[in-house]
Image 1 (tube, rainbow, N blue to C red):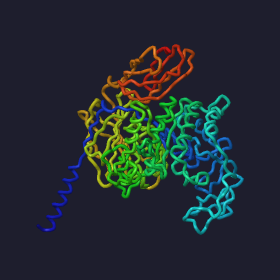
Image 2: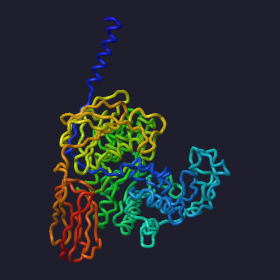
Image 3: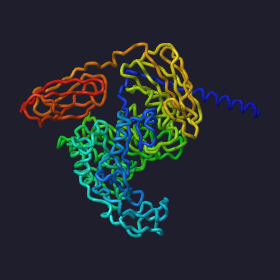
Length: 625
């Protein structure tokens, strides 16, 4: 065979291979319907752009507490100690920021934090003179504990210690649980500054407490024990709940994959059984709720800065949350999950593990959600960052994640946020791809189920993909429908506003409830469909039947809602004067009842109300002692 024939054969084989890798996606609007939390469209934010920018982008949730800088924040004096800059104390006005957000973004949910360390900033008078030292330039010693009269170490910088440590008592003060939660009265109380508490529901239980002996070693040179931390956590959570019953308590706000499984150097054992850190945390929270009846956890919050040795690995990092078949290259702390060091598995699936532990210790229908409040896409190349972020948005929408606030924000991410938040609907439904790890579809429908958006993400770094989408449970007419696509993003930021951005409009033809579209490499494409049927009956839920039993009740009230829409649902018990006496947040699955402990209620008649975005039902019951 001559060289020309050989090259021709190789070309033909390559062409056949590419054609053989076309993708089929099956969408079923009748399967796996879940409410999409609008708060996955969030980020860590300082609001340095005009208000219209955030509105146009569709930002719905902002974590504003500043991470490490929240731990020693003194809300009374409006100052905080910065652990990554000599522990110097600077002004920081959470009141002013909250008032500004309330004015500019009244529909946005904002997350602040409670301080659990035990000490906060007290004075700016004892700052290290960084300007006099080197005109405030960064150097390897910026983390040295120099506030409070310390002396820099210029020879042993790598060891991280100052030549003379500053006196922590000069710039910090004690800060017990009562002080940290009193901000709730300051903001929302009758004599407070008048903020609407419904805009500030979510509160971080401090930040990365598992590494305080590193980040806040001036106050805590030796890490507090896991048990003592939990004691402090529970005390703050209970006091916060007493002041603000509707609050969303979010913890443990853990640093990274290593700390997911192990608290410092501790080996946590209870009655001879080893517990990884996350399971121990869940067990302690569940035990407290069973003992006191007070919920101390609403959202299980973690941080994750994924490891990826290659860009191809980074494009698969979303699988570390739920995929039990995925070997995550960054698995490390996982090896300690059973108390030893076992490298035999790299299957992380951390959110699924957390869900399993929650069910184990709380039981089914516990209502506790998951949140990711710090994250990075890894690569900062715009097309990679955009696609990786889009994939996480789709994965978290499919799985009911409560909020998602990336810490690192790269060019391309505003574009993906805008595409999803502006075009995705309220409910995620089933989408299955024949090449899921390369091309995924994330499908959502509206309340009436007569509008659908199919968002196709192509993670292939080299090839465009021909994708055929077959629709079930949704009747689309034979017609042309609008598409919006992100691809080939430049290195500079393209998102300016809702009308000035990189989205390319196109169209696709639907025939016999199917369409075929070719999507470019590293692209995200939204296909926006309308149904021929208005309000498909199986998605309607106008008046679900509420069942309560036993009635009269003495201790456990069972509540069942015949509803076909799963969504976070508030159960509130009030007396006949309209006073709220008990409430909780649950998820109904459409058939399984949930229980509420009413043993603390006195004899009498009460009302139980079940309410979310889709229905509100109230019934009367009586308590007999």
